[in-house]
Length: 93
Image (cartoon, rainbow, N blue to C red):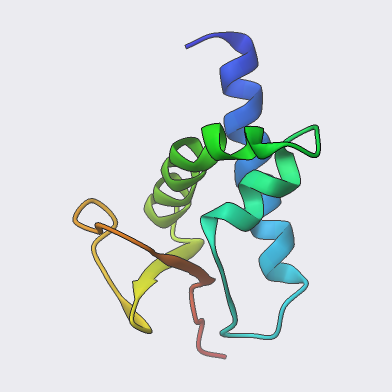
């Protein structure tokens, strides 16, 4: 992976967490929200960032930061197909 690719990956991870921090506890975002926020431009170039955004979400799942949901229920990030949502992991306390 190129340095630029790694920088984009890290930026997507930070953006996912920042977007979730601005939402109510338990609220979700779509990977496209992060892709659009990271994309520089007004065109549809953000679409090329959709799979990198989904991969960033999977890394955050592995780190215990977020969970991926479908139909409001957590799903195995590796098994998820189709539209997904991302939310912070609920922590007791």
